Length: 128
Image (cartoon, rainbow, N blue to C red; front, side):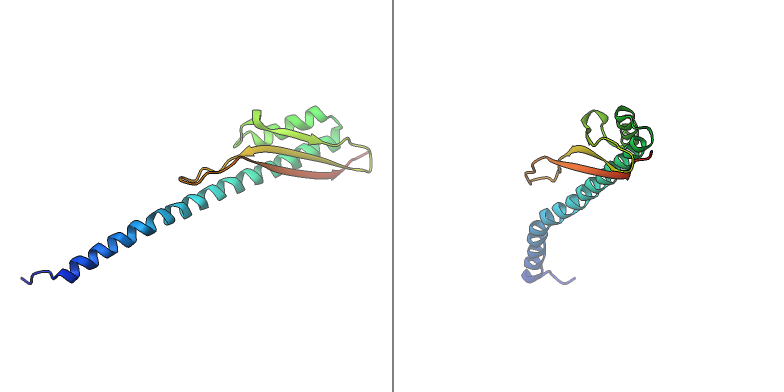
């Protein structure tokens, strides 16, 4: 049985050191991809909620009903109490706009992040 040489021990040690250097970067990359996917999902949900809300606004002209529809559309994956709304009035023939805002913060280990606001916007022409 051949005896291991000192070069094979030093090569294993070098691989371990390289792995220890690369692992944190790899983990941050993986967590970054996951968090970006979470942010993108929230953005798509907000855009859908804004479109549904502005649709209700253009049909009924009732801002409170439009907010309720937007909350119902977003409540499956977002906390409804954190949603804020900006909407324009609806005059026949003019475009109505609804913005739905939601606070979001990335959670990537070892990296500080500040909260940001995601906004979904919907625009439709008001009916008569």
